[in-house]
Image (cartoon, rainbow, N blue to C red; front, top):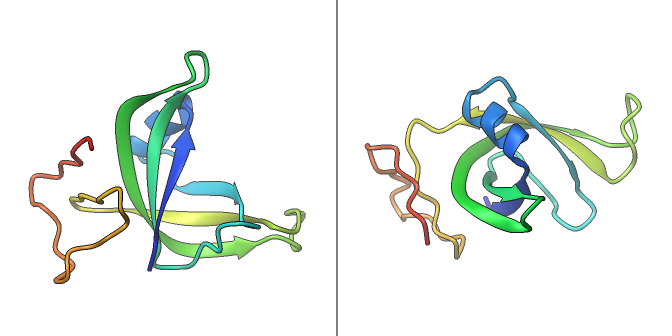
Length: 109
């Protein structure tokens, strides 16, 4: 399992947080996304060129790989699941026991 830190624009960040957006389309040629990985989606403001400090973490539950159903080779669509609560360190490590804080916070780093 890996944690992939990715930029996400504000409108897509909000839809992901509100759970109206439960999938993510990404270039997979340099990432090798896998089921069970986590996406650390960091809100990025394209107008200012800066991160907002907002982060949402989702678990990858299914991957549709490119080269089929009209999806270009090298791309993928990932189905995402909300975490009940989560803290994902920027260094990509996970607590050995796999536990997450109960308060649901994701601290800034």
